[in-house]
Image (cartoon, rainbow, N blue to C red):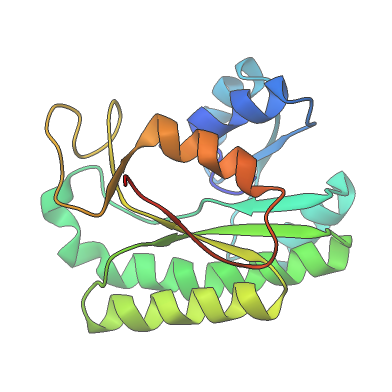
Length: 189
């Protein structure tokens, strides 16, 4: 799982382990490796922008499925506009590198995080690029609503729709491992 130390990743790792999966939890921050190990994952410290190291790490683990939960978002919601370029790069280049690594490893399943709302122009173009890459690879695009709950931008309030509680999003992501290629919206009904 790429992005294992993020808001969804920290919820997904224990759910996947409990479901009987061996999980490699990728983070680019060495200080987060111990937390991933505590949750039951084999920590992998790797930068998605280092395509050859990423490919080597994914191939070495030999996953049946690759779960892409990577974002590059600031800790404070107010700073999202100034970091939009970094998140767009993650959606484009990070996804390209991860898809290539999944193919090299022979992974049969690919799930990737997207969003269920329309962002600004740059964000919309990056979202479309991510989704195109994933669908061309036969993967599943997970369009999450705005996440709320502990550890999110909306810990004590509800964001505007579309939205979904982070715990529910994680549970539905595990179920999506069995979904056919396509687009799934993970939002409150």
